[in-house]
Amino acid sequence: MRLEFLIIDPQNDFSDVPGAALPVPGASADAERLATLLDRLGGRIGQIHVTLDTHQLLDIAHPLFWQNGEGRQPAPFTPITVADVEKETWRPFDPRFYQRALDYVRALRDGGRYTLTIWPPHCLIGTWGHNVIPAVAGALRRWEEAGFKRVDYVTKGRNLWTEHYSAVRAEVPDPADPATQPDVRLIETLEKADVVALSGQALSHCVANTVRDIADRFSPESIRKLVLIEDTSSPVPGFEDMARQFLEDLRGRGMRTAKAADFLR
Image (cartoon, rainbow, N blue to C red; front, side, top):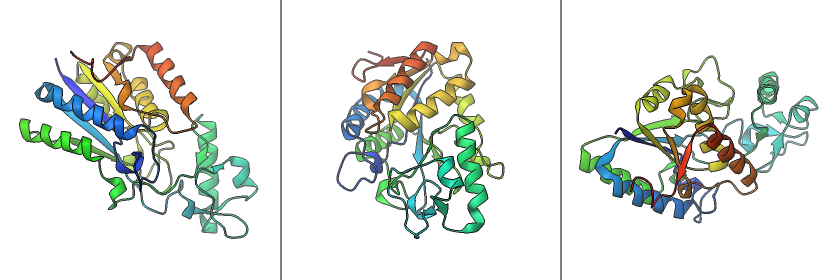
């Protein structure tokens, strides 16, 4: 049996410890359970894919990109709608970028994606917040050392102009940037596995979007290969209903769920 893991954004800035930019309650305990599971399965794991949310300070979903008529930046968690941009309640820091920003929020709306939300700057390249949570990082290293293998790290989110919740594609792909297009290599690799264990943060956003995008590109039979390790992933506070809807939808399509202590016993 070919067992692979897809661990989505297991990074310090999503942990619930002091200094985390975007803490997800329960993430540290999730990481401990995941690390224990990785150590238990060890050599039975054929491959581990780890996605890394990867940003810079200037980003369309960070405060620095936007300002109001008084030159003030939006507070974290401010939603920015199409109407907000059309009325210039919020505008890009550079007037030259106005039309592109307007096109972006319209594309989000028309594509049924999330309303643009301004997040605290997080997972910035070169910072502690970008690193993998220590418990998981230790388990990954032990797996590499024991099996003479390499974790497949997949970065996402560097493009200034689009959000990248899903590890498979950006919310609005940028035609000029292949990194925002569907990741065919990752999708095809996962579909060749017999079982794909899913974990990471946050259940309501990056996990949900990644798994939905994978399922949309898998055959119906392949969706049954997906197993979400449910006690190794938690939602962003205030978005619990979105996490529940994701679980309901994907279970209905064939995805399975399991507790870390019970998986493949």
